[in-house]
Image (cartoon, rainbow, N blue to C red; front, side, top):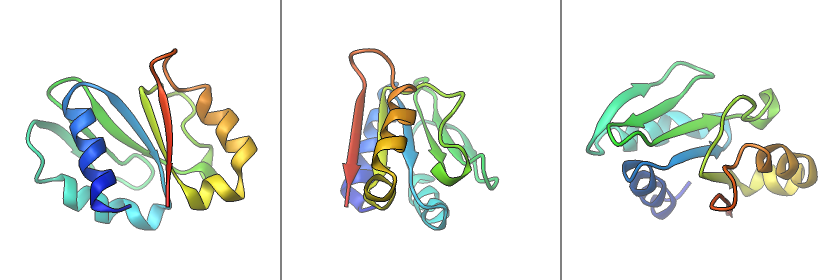
Length: 112
């Protein structure tokens, strides 16, 4: 995930939006390390399989792993999908994640 994507999801979460990131697990700890300097963090969890950064605004970033069931049980305003997953599992993944995006205001974003 490049710094522009990280900055964007951080700003959205700081503004109170719920963001879910479907990215390879090998990238998560690196991203959390970059996020730990963000202002307004109320919770930063690094436990494997339950990685998340929550903000005092009520927003947060939750990391999910599609190979382990995706984001079932979560809802979000924005879902960010690494194109590795999107290209390999596009139809199944898109259907699964579309169900967790909140109403009409939600967005699904893919990146390279």
